[in-house]
Length: 185
Image (tube, rainbow, N blue to C red; front, side):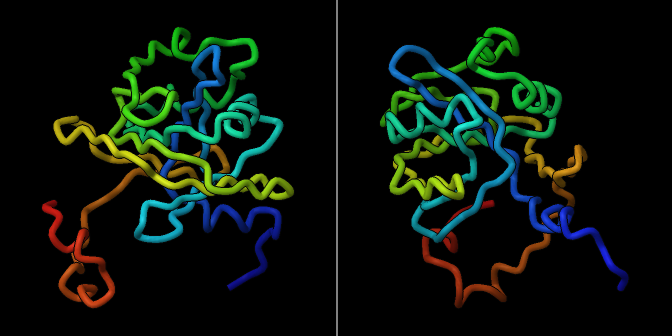
């Protein structure tokens, strides 16, 4: 072991899936790229980190809802492009040719190219840290999509995708909720 720069420590922890967050502010849809996400428990509660510097922040605060869309690896350049421009002056759906579909429970749209879309309501906002606590209210998945690997950001401009699946469900059975145990892979 050797010393490592403290300001780069996050690169060891940031590898959760890259997420596209869609919002609707009452007038129009927007989408942003988020790499700071966290699962809070088995009951479809999540956290994202963002803040007033992101155009979508105001819509999340105002409407208290959004969609978490999980893009596959073949959307990498689109995901990065979305993160490099602002909804303040760019219609990202038009610029990146994103197909959207009406959600069931929230006004923010679903992204049809993504592996999954989780419709969410905001439970809490911890403003000083930009943490938004979300509760999933509906989920939509595309089991037929050819590219299945989600993207993982390292935080330094590099990304990784999933490798082989390592199955330890039998070993972990005592810790997993019944809903996960009955899921077919």
